[in-house]
Image 1 (cartoon, rainbow, N blue to C red):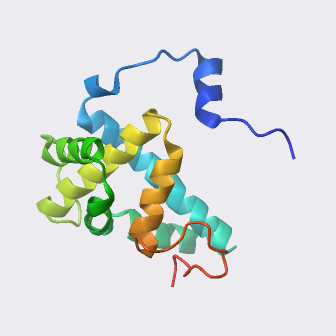
Image 2 (spheres, rainbow, N blue to C red):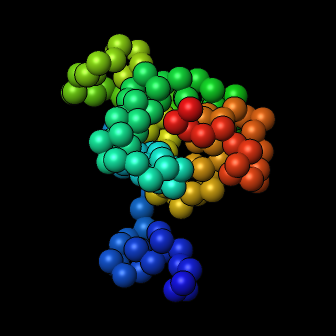
Length: 158
């Protein structure tokens, strides 16, 4: 295997990306990138858990990343959020969006936007560990130990 690198640091370095004050970002911009970060995490979990047809992976990923599922995950992790994280979540949830929810209630769509804003904020803050910890808690329960053997953890597609 090649040498391990810090993805975000290397991306910033190679693309000469400027440092930015995350407090200045619109919550919808944070949600824009957070949506894809969360999607990548879920797809990574599914691909590593099972080598099945792409359409099956896509169907399962879609059911996990859709707004109602994200709203439920957000509800589960709320007690774990710091004051700063809760503030980012609320900014995203309360942001005026010009898109309508597809196959979701307005409430779930707004909660999902808050969740995505939080994920985007943590990603741009380069706190990938915190993202993974929160997603893990939301998927498996806050008491599920992150260091458990993969065989002991309930599969995401069960």
